[in-house]
Amino acid sequence: MKGITDRAAQALLEALEEDGVPEDQCVRYVGSAHGGEFEVDGPCPDDLVFDHEGRMVLAVGPETVEGCPDHVLDFESDQFTLLRYSRVRSCRVYEAEQLATV
Image: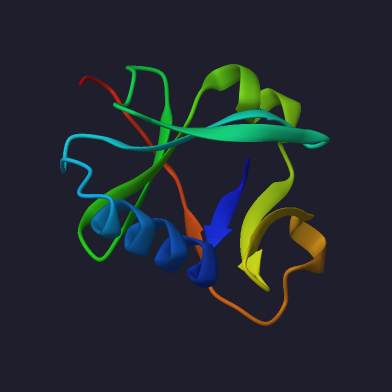
């Protein structure tokens, strides 16, 4: 996964705050470009982690990254969508940070 849009980052942040999820946990996307699911979890050492407004909002494991290497997570019309990076034009994309240690 190449990144997440500002809309997706904001939606994830709001969901985490509304549900009172502790700061050391975030949303994890598990799947591929063809679909997947979200769960609340803490980051693992090899995850790509996305932050928004100083809060960890999304973790993606290496298998998922390999399954959708040129995709960006977006949020529009109350749903998350994986878009090919080349189609993202109108919003800012947050790049991931690889965790060295947890």
